[in-house]
Amino acid sequence: MGSLTLGQRFFDNKLGVLIAGSYQNTYRGSNSIFYSSKVVPTAQYAAITSKSDREYSEQQKRYGLFSKVDYVIDSRNKLSLFSTYVNLTNIQVRDEVSTNFSTDYDPDAGKAQLGYSTRSRLTEQQIYNGMLRGDHKLFDDKLKVQWSAVYSSAENDVPDNTTISLNGVRDNFVDNRTLLTNGTPLTHRWERNTDEDKAGYLDLTYTAPVAGVKC
Image 1 (tube, rainbow, N blue to C red):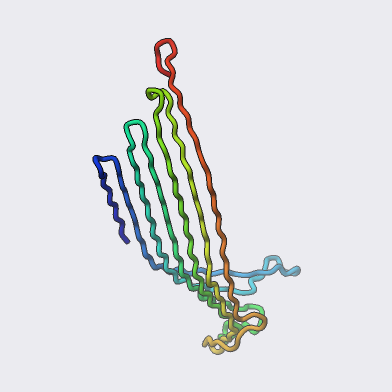
Image 2 (image 1 turned 120 degrees about the horizontal axis):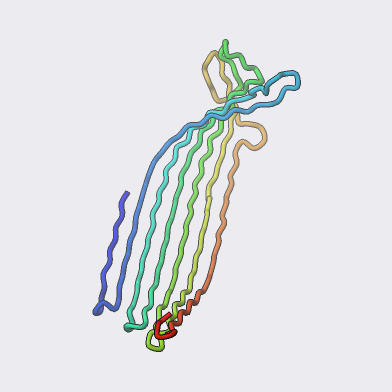
């Protein structure tokens, strides 16, 4: 984890440059439990049919960059360029063990049907924003003109989302994996979506004296 900021003006303070950046790399883990249930017509309450124990291991890398460059043409004209970039990379592994309470379940004898699932997922998110702005004063500073051209883009990319599922059994309180599940024991999924925006803005301010007072 760290950050750095640098700034300086050049050419008799006409050109200014400011650059800032930060980086963060964290690891964390978590656990959760989910229960599934169904309604039994003859029972007063819903019956719990299975329990899923999930364990997450996650690495998150974040970094961001910001820059500003401005140039003072003269006392009445100035140009500025702003740029921002942020990135988040998330690497996650989820291990899940499901216990079936409906089939061959005998807690006293330590018997149950189990299900194992491992998911590995990589996610990368990026945002960029750039703005060019001009500030001008005209007609003895009576008219102020500020214009800006803005470009923004965002991207969410999941190049790898893989899940593998296996059957398992608990016998005499000992859990073991057995076979791949029927159907689709191994799945791969890829996702990517982007967004882009372009915009322009113009702001005019005119100051005129009214009864000797500027307004």
